Image 1 (spheres, helix red, strand yellow):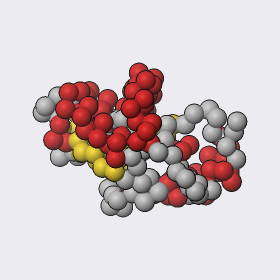
Image 2 (cartoon, rainbow, N blue to C red; image 1 turned 135 degrees about the vertical axis):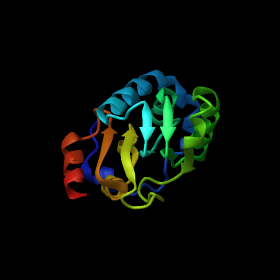
Image 3 (cartoon, rainbow, N blue to C red; image 1 turned 30 degrees about the vertical axis):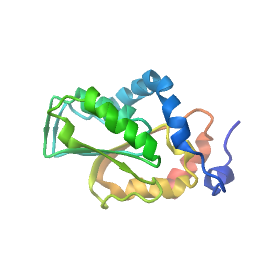
Image 4 (cartoon, helix red, strand yellow; image 1 turned 90 degrees about the vertical axis):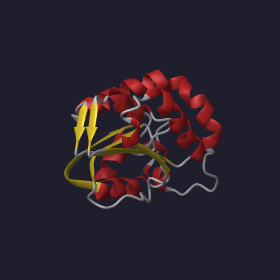
Length: 178
């Protein structure tokens, strides 16, 4: 079933409890990691990070941020921030980072509970942004897209992935509106 434009922007009375979903989220980790790798390639993020500010929006259990960090060979004056609305998802990312990321890279990655519709990130501060399979769950996609655009530096790049069931034309309209 496709989400209508109205459904994508309606405020839900009872938001999904992502904390309950988090523990089973790892069952799709291999699939998510594959898409994370494609996003890293598409964004042309090098293994040697220098002066990069990377934001992972609606990170879930961290497939994009952790895959990126685990593939880094060097980090200079750079940071990776992985955000999610669910404190449980953020805690899972933190725990995974202690084993999945090389010790030398760990100080460059941070995690925060954050709403994609109100990113607590300075404007024009992010060089690369990814939102891997999160946008279709946002109550207000247009506001989330505006926030992603706001935090991107001029010339910055973003990769946003979605399941096929998201109304593609509706998403393109939302991008144009934002």
